[in-house]
Amino acid sequence: MSRANACVAISVYVLRRRSDQTELLFLRRSGGRFAGQWWPVTGTREPTESPMECALRELREETGLTPHTLHPTALTAPVEGGGYLRIYVAPVNESAAVRINWEHDAYRWCAPSEASAIVGEFSAPIVRGAVQVFEKQLTE
Image 1 (spheres, helix red, strand yellow):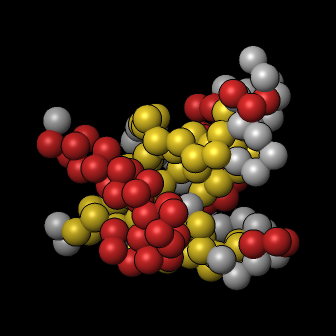
Image 2: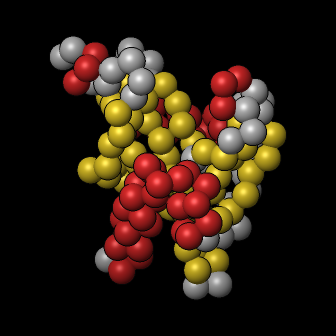
């Protein structure tokens, strides 16, 4: 498979229910080209790992979290330089303890409307899709 058609990166939208409200976890990048920006867990896939393995690794590295389950979605986004980013949804307990790594200097839990505003118009549909996957899992 060519790089243009390959999953080269992942994003994991970590979600929880708190007081009957859905919340999404966002991390503030501490350096590099995206310093100061708020993002979900995001990372580049290693050549020897599957997208799912990458999602679990990045989630542990960036937050210290282990989700109940990890749901792949049909959501993707193009990546600069070729390939695409696959979106995952990771539900966690309301009391899950977040431990950010050196790549981030802060984290926050956001309502879906706030999360959509953070990511902007281009990625807002991804936030809405992640919330739909999460809320569907709650009813099954």
